[in-house]
Each structure stands twice: as C-alpha cells, then as structure tokens.
Length: 112
Length: 117
Image 1 (spheres, rainbow over the protein chains, first blue to last red):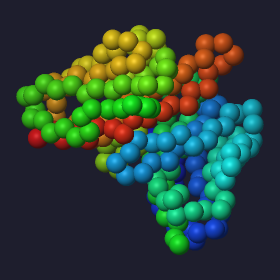
Image 2: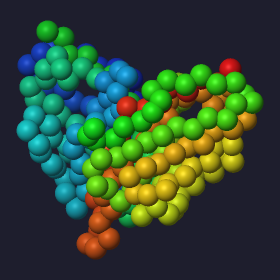
Image 3: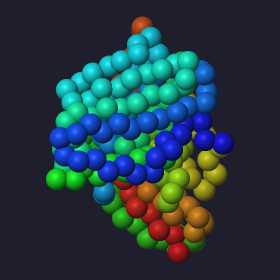
Image 4: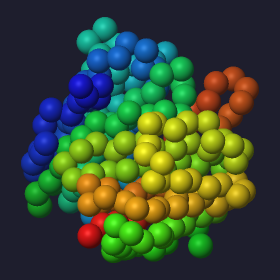
C-alpha cells in the first residue's frame, strides 16, 4: 500500500496561471516533506521542503502548504512557466530521518 | 565536475554478468544513497550510507552489493541479475546534521539506466 500518493498522474496549465500539485500521505509519523522536479534523462532536482512545525513555506514562485490533520500537502507554482514542465515528486520521512518515501509523481505540462 | 555524477549512464548486461555502477558526489556531503526506479513505480530507497557506514538496507536482494570506500564515492556491484531488475538506478547524497535535527534534502545524480537481458 502506497504511503505517499499523488493521485493526479498529469496536469496541464496555461502559462502565467497557477499550478497546484497535490500529495497525500497515510503515515502520521511523517514529519518532513520534500518536493522534487524531474526532467527526462536527469535525476530529480530538489525544489522546496517543509517540516511539520510549519504549515507553509515559500521560495520564489514555489509555495508548499501542509495540512497535518488532513495528511495533505500541496505545491503551488505561480506564475507557471513552460520551463516548469516536468514530473513532480513529493517525498516524506519520519523523525526527520533519511528514509524518504516517494510518491509516484505528477507530470505537469505548462502550455504557452 | 559538480553535484552528483553517475557512470555509466546506460548499461546492458546479461544475467550471468558482473558489473558495477559508480557514483561520486562533489558536494562535501556525509551521506549517500542508492534508489531504484522501475517503470510506473515510485522511487524506492535501497541503501543508505552515513559516514561510509551502511545504516539502511531496505530488504534488497544480495545480488545487489553496495560499497562505500569514502564519503565521496559509492558503488553498486551487480551480479546474476534478473530481467525484472531492469530500472533506473539513482544515487543521491545529503548532509546529515547530527545536532538539532537533520533536514536531509537529498541531491540526486542523473541515474544509470540498466537493462538486464
């Protein structure tokens, strides 16, 4: 059973609009979350993180929101750019540890 | 070289071959990882090394044998693999902070695409 779920395999957004990527988890022990972006033929690139003591973290165009009671996090990209087209993974760990569980990914396409 | 590098980028091997994957990190990190990504499946953590010592083995079959000679290099030795072991193998590194909690953003290499015939 997947502990980290990304229920939308793909998402298409118009350039300049907001992209919202969602991630749900089942393990209440998870307390640290990462988002990665992956282009074809490259390894995942770290984007942004959030710990369970926060409910929001921002870095430029990227904002991650964490709703612990719902076991849900989301990544907002504003404004979306064509270069943001990639597969986005969320990952979670417990006890701020190194054993990250990854979701299956969501493919984002930003249309010009 | 910068970041995390992996060689070879592509590898085709028979089930009776022995081969090795190499990873090198140029970030001064103290932890290294091997991940496997099979088609249509999430990334799966295989091994964790902290300060050259293996601290995690996620029930990986013994036909995969990791080696970490120093904190910058990590190898994955492969022998008698099966076709279902065909996958993308990713190496990552991070800086583990021992005091005050560890926020372990992991930095990935480009991966080795392995095909077992």
